[in-house]
Image 1 (cartoon, helix red, strand yellow):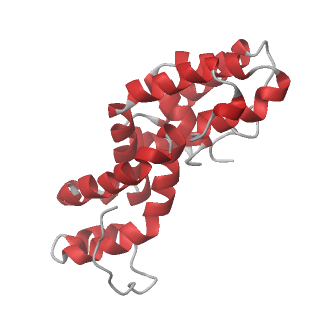
Image 2 (cartoon, helix red, strand yellow):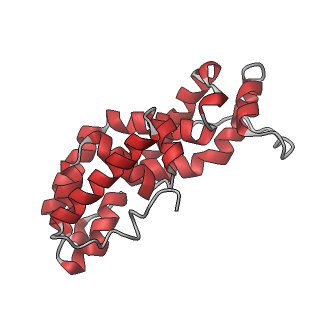
Length: 204
């Protein structure tokens, strides 16, 4: 994991966008954002790809953000959503591995999953209902675009506007992709919707 220089935290009124702006002249200011958001970006990446790669990819998210800090535009949205967008792009580069994980889950007994990501854990909770294989198949069958929206909602807890910023798409597109993904999951599970708690509505 990359070690950023430690700095004292700024006054509370200094927001994230201001920190990015300050870091353009004083690079060590970016360490405050790293300290604040690394844990949740790590959890998101770990949930998508497992813990073995999460540390490196979460750190890489901040390295990419640091290199691109000059281009960050606070008028387009929040720093948090910007970081999730970068993380999602890095996850996409590992999509083949993620797809293989889901395909393997269809053939692997629950007790043999040793490094679970979010999709694995969801499937484990549904195993008693006998729908693990169907769920894994449905998740693997989703388009990359639909799966990104679904997981940003379920795992990162982002709202429509934040997801729209992270993926650079209109909020209406977020809604349509999310509805389509949920519909496919329900169809794969025979109309049962045991995912309500995990894939609840964004924005509440």
